[in-house]
Length: 174
Image (tube, rainbow, N blue to C red; front, side):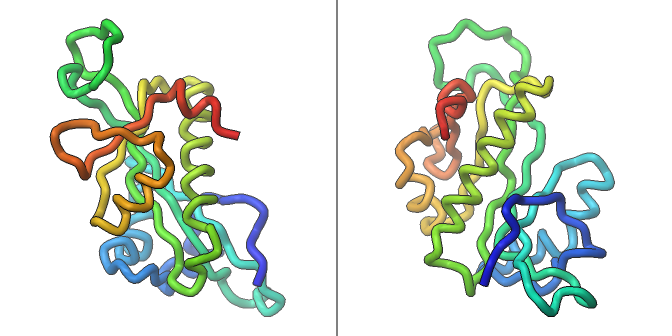
């Protein structure tokens, strides 16, 4: 089975968002019920990796993976840095969601999705959306293990399930 060459914005008229199953009901529900709605409201953007199929002409494309990004702010005191920052909230990119369809796990799509999401974060920042870091709230221990494999994420607060990576680190990802 082949995938599109790039992630595209979720579109319920072209993508079968309701059939996505990553094994985590909250992640499936978000894509099916809230991803497109949140895009319309300007709250976040969700990109999907469609599956290429010969039979696809008359039906919606299956989704192999997705990620969602949103703008957010954090208070300066929470940021583990030596950089002198203003006393008001600091802008960050929130990696709100990242999931791979159950049938495609084990094919390194999680890694591809993560790298794509982090590159998109840098692209958005370079295009004018100011952000100091990318932060994420980890769903569970499985997800924490996934992110820890990359050795670039650091705990953001005393909560080990909240991670961050500085934007200047992400600029070096190829």
